[in-house]
Image (cartoon, rainbow, N blue to C red; front, side, top):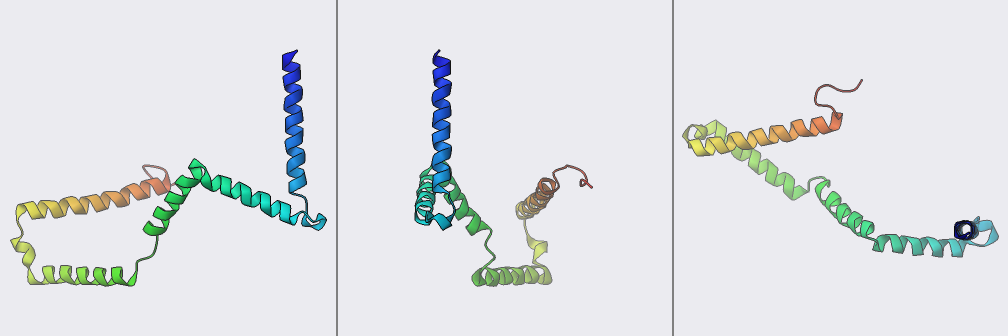
Length: 132
């Protein structure tokens, strides 16, 4: 008997929920615009205060920081660094670096190459070849 009563209560609750949603989201012609906006604001505030909302806010901060185009200061620093590399190669100073420094440069170059390879692998979603 309790399962029948439970099911009836479930259906009543579901019907009440559907009726409530239908009442709130009626077209603005019937004058429910304020009620709809109020309900949407309330739901947005609840979503923003949820755990997922907080995580998305943090993620958005990282995304906007990391995916932003370079600023003028960063471009000037890049140009000065490239000028240093050109001067390093042109003057032949690479002949006088120690084995430890050379090994470090090789490791950094390998790391950058592997970043590119990993990015390509993730992008194509296969280790070898693209899905055609």
